[in-house]
Image (tube, rainbow, N blue to C red; front, side):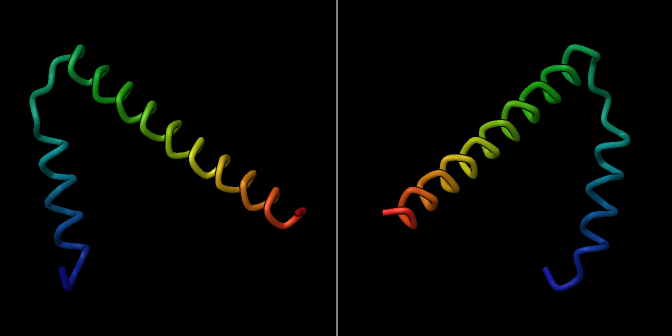
Length: 56
C-alpha cells in the first residue's frame, strides 16, 4: 500500500455504510474492547519480564 489515505477513506466509507444491527454492533465493540485489553496485558507482561531481567 503506497498511499494509506485512500485505503483508510474507503475503509471508513464501508464501515459507515454497513447495515449492522444493534446486536452486531455491540458484539463488534465487545470483541474490539476484549482485543485491546488482551494486547494491553501482553505489554504489561513484557514490561514486567524486562524489569525482572534488568534487576537480575
